[in-house]
Length: 253
Image (cartoon, rainbow, N blue to C red; front, side, top):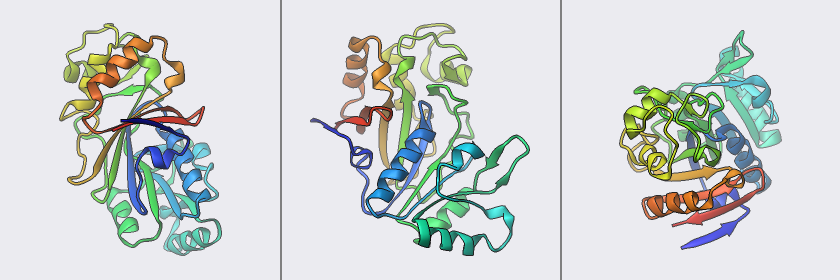
């Protein structure tokens, strides 16, 4: 079954309360903030974060940034911001690089269990801006309370060579998928990353709902390859194709 929607939360099948972990590549940060904005507009209380690092300029897309490492007053500040804006970004501390250190999985678990917000949305790994990312053995860093894990890839990578330009941790990608250096990223190869037990869903908590989100469908150059990829992945778990830029999502279930 396939249907279209402009509601990102609906496309991802979110429930009344969820802890969402985003993994992979292809625009996780953009998806995180777009989803948070939509949920807030519906009247929900939302907290965004990361278990890795994020540029502070990006984090400032939220109404307020709370730093856990700033001292014991951070909890009070968080409550005040959520009461006022219903939305905040929480991080650990500022880094000299201009990035913010993320929070620990333990803190993410505690915030969700304490019912501080309706939705906790976080990036659980980094992809250095690449559309495709293969996780290292210690990645992603997904909190145990995550109820939804969204594995992402940017569709502009279809047909591009398997190199560091398009794939973050290309050597690991080749190890997991059997691809050769410089080989075109065909649908069957990308599908292996999404289905491999040590691929993008590595470390997914037991019981968490798994969703594949293929972003930037507007940049696909060969629709036959896209149809082939959908044919391989459809029925494995909830599959979403879309473009956050255009705000249109196709849901395959």
